[in-house]
Length: 162
Ligand SMILES: [Zn+2]
Ligand SMILES: [Zn+2]
Image (cartoon, rainbow, N blue to C red; front, side):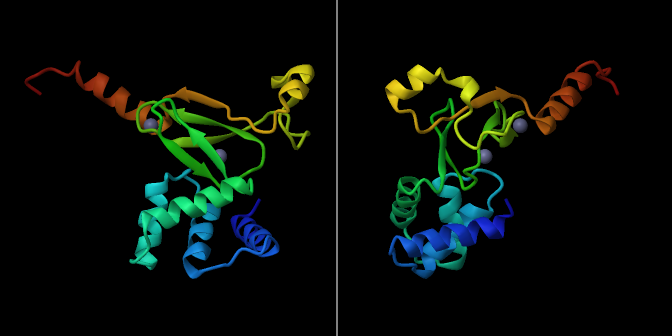
């Protein structure tokens, strides 16, 4: 979905719920809806601070909590216990670089079912637990990190006098 469309969609749902739309909240939602890098709360805070220097970290957390409760954002917890946020709530998994922690979207091969991918959940178990959310993370090394790694391992074999 186009990010501007996503931004407007969240704004619309906030208004429908009767929540106030302060300029800071507007900015927080814009940043999350447009972010491609799955930002942390601190990342969002620093971006909002650029526009509204008086904003508090507490305001960021409060807005994140509201958006999570409305299911307008997803929480990604990495193996390092870092929490990152995703304004894209369409079904997809993530691949996380073990070196630089970059998070990249990983679309499902079969995206015909616009819900929890059935293949991952036994229907009985799904019903018994009333499963509503999921989070699928894969770990590896991203392109730029493996390029650096290859360069370094190559230079180890260069003659010392060179
Ligand atoms: Zn990397
Ligand atoms: Zn994502």
